[in-house]
Length: 453
Length: 109
Ligand code: FES
Image (cartoon, rainbow over all chains, first blue to last red; front, side, top):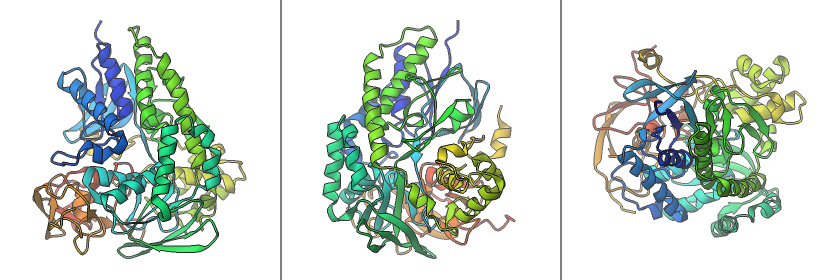
């Protein structure tokens, strides 16, 4: 019998641990990743020639980052895994991945597929967010880590979630000017979630310590009103503080983000089932605890459940173990990891409740605010389309183009669902239906796809 | 933080501020025909935005665009070169002699 071909998509913490687990069982998996070097977003490595040590790049998580990088590089060097870096999977059908990279396009077949595609920032629109100088929080962190740059001279960070305060701390430490950190989560939600957060006391305390260190920069319970811009970009952000005072902070860059949104396009194309998760306020794929989605497909990491980097490592090992036992091969014992997973999930759900999706902000969007940054579709247009076309996400997409732009709805889908729900008199965004993914999930030159051997 | 030609403060028209890693080898490229400097290991996005406030004109609105996600997910950062294919600025490394455009190529309708 020839060795089963297992392909892993994504070389972040989940993909790396999955690859390592399969290699330890004697398989030689292929790992496809968009990055030049393995690590994923959170443990992303700068290009060659950069000199800051891991302690500067990853702070208290440096040990974990180095362990993952070393494990992966060692397996590649030993020929025990095949690494295809700088390559995107753009489509998937019948056991074949269609991939595009610098050296052209290539089809890659698989017997088993582990999707460890991670997450992107979860974005809520704000009037003026199409201006140059508005970035996702994740973008600002990548810029700092992988390029050593700040995205502006005077930066405001706004939104909610662990990355908001972490990034503020990192930027200040690196010497950037951070004018304000605006958290749309109120102190009350943060305190209410503390019981769940206390299952990981060191993380919970680190978060509190970070807020304390930000001092007068940090404002909880704000309402974001809009971003002002000139021809060359952002000039200020308007907001209302917890005491209902109208405020305006001058700045030339704004980082926005409300925690994470699972990157699920490939899982969708692979035929996974989805369910709306009210805690994370988004559609997530359905699997068993190990990450089995059925049909030889396994999911792991933030693309399945938003547990963060530690949870991704655990989920990567579990998915690989499930894959091995389904192949009839000896698999490592998973009891301890399953326990860890429960604890990490409890913590992660606490985080999601402490730093919720800003439903009120989205529902209050003025009609002329741009909802879709790709094609400039306004909140008013989405409301109108939903009113005459019906309160269903895919109908609003095909009639009004919201979700059809080049980001494929990654950054407008959740806000659009909120607006559609209100227009249709539905209780919540989960009732408007899920936007179906469409290949190619990354723009690919048609010529590249035609060239495929 | 060093005060080299490429360290903070940024170029007058630039958006990005270099905070670290400023000792890398310089790279020359052309931006809309004018010679500009970047550093080896910069992405095209970093190279342009340390010299200019934006990458391109939006197709569906009056504003300019300067990228958004930096992780290949939003597709906001595709730009033109004088020759050859369009490139995604946040995930393409800058190379010596690149001829980059912040506007649409003239031979393009
Ligand atoms: S900035 Fe989003 S794809 Fe380049």
